[in-house]
Length: 250
Ligand code: PEP
Image (spheres, protein in one colour):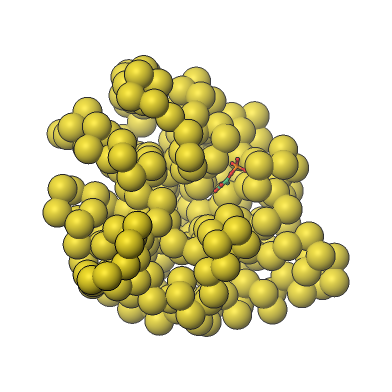
């Protein structure tokens, strides 16, 4: 696999200045020596300045969790991609299932956000994933294909795809490595270029190695475990070990 692994944390609506500082300090110390893996944290908007200042010049990148599909204007409460880019934001999560389910984001809106992020030079992390009901009805591929097909993917513009089965997010019940690999392989075939496809859904330090050993799983999008420094570092180390064992094997 020539694709660099990525482990990105989604802090969701968690944090405080003090907690963020302690977490970032511990992460910077703990990920030293894991250069084969790209790491990032996606923080709530008010803390992006704090995160950007603490991470300046470090190997830990950072991103936002949402972005407006509009460039500017009368959109109270929204944040544009250009605003994020202006102070160095690299990644932005779009289409997270919590935004699709709790805030009614449609496939079309997610596609517009994806395009707005890329226009501003951000790397969108596009989330797709099926509900438990869809999985049990045998509709997993149909759902993720619909979510992916809604988005215009330019193979030359940086982007990351995250397969996040809704039933695995925040539930402690991760997809098995084989279940995840099957969907990743399906998604990969639909992609026009060498885009990274990461897995998200109850990834922990204990299950990360088995997931990252799969040929089409290029890393993880981590929710709950990204708030605990030792857990996140353990996941990054599992990704680094997977990259190292691949180099030995090739
Ligand atoms: C997420 O919210 O993107 C996620 C994967 O959450 P968790 O790791 O807590 O399941």
